[in-house]
Length: 468
Image (spheres, rainbow, N blue to C red):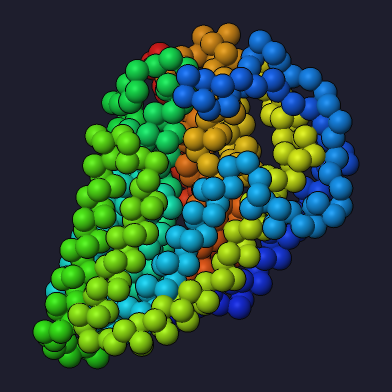
């Protein structure tokens, strides 16, 4: 979708694909060059009670042979599919293909346009209140239940809605994806970052919630100010955005819309219930994919599309998002290269060693920085917690910094950069589906990221001052 007009389907634009691919390839080359400059090393590892690999601080860090063969580096986007932990990567790819197929079918049967016209007709006059509610919803999804990948199917809907309401695609991505990242980082009770990190350092799960709730409120306020200022600047007059909409109710479309919203609603309810039914937490992406697929098929058929046409449009939509799969594999190959070359642990060891000579107030900010750096290579919040928390928590303890504040610094470092780094597959998918160039996204969002970095840094220093 362009910044001003709607596009058909979810085709990844050539410009967006080329820009993102070039950036990621340059990062791949830079990573390969680092394998010649950084010596190999690794931390000893053990397993926790649940069988998860964690750093063994007793075993410590040792130097090992580094480097990676050229052929393995050049084939890394393919080899990553067979690497440890590739199951989640494959799940994301399948998830993306389902999204592409369903959205193309919704677009071709006219249900997507009908839904947007209906929302605009009914809520257009209170569009800024709607913006605030949508942004709060997405932040809540990230903060309370740790949703991130699961919200991708909703991003194109919000982007299309933003355009219908007289804004542009950037506002739509900001209301959805940027909000998810902010909520994920605030982590009031995010099971995948805060929950795992607190468990690793021996804290009661979700304890100390009041401070993270304060962070959530302040970050939400900053995000809304950022979105409102930009939206006011580029908005089209409401009358103009609605003048061409002679909305007329359609019974078949209404039935299809009810069907779609009902089934997707059940999926969202199941995801929300994962807070209490913890066994569902490992299957939220599968739940969303299955429910979204079922909703798309049922809604398009109810709306009047034939089965043969549905199969054709679904296949075309699936093919249209294949470029995003290429970007995802390339982005994940960066971590693969560092792990195979045995330099990832060396980078981490150097960072932890540097933290030990800093003044107390700077240590908590440096921990924040360490997580920010590692998040470039390891987007997974849970995987990063198992790698980092056993190392940074003892460093913090030496300086009298509480494990609770250390967890907040970890959550901050993990969440916000998820919607900024080109190595995060969810960002690449969402920008591709919204037809927003990565360079355009960086140019637009860096000011918010900078202001948020200052705000969250001050929050960490405030937490240190009050002894949180």
